[in-house]
Length: 55
Picture 1 (cartoon, helix red, strand yellow):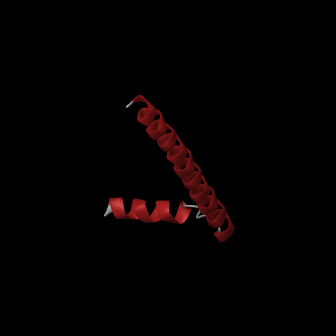
Picture 2 (cartoon, rainbow, N blue to C red):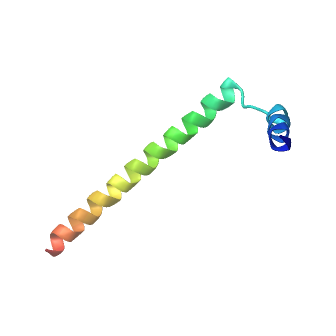
């Protein structure tokens, strides 16, 4: 029972992000993921072209 009291106490002390903070964080995560995807697509294309020249 002590565990559950501790969990409830911790949950009450937790500061949840606002809608604006959540939207901002989500935008940052999606933007970063898209940038990495584009970067790795370009690198993959370049490596494929380079290997095509060597073959």
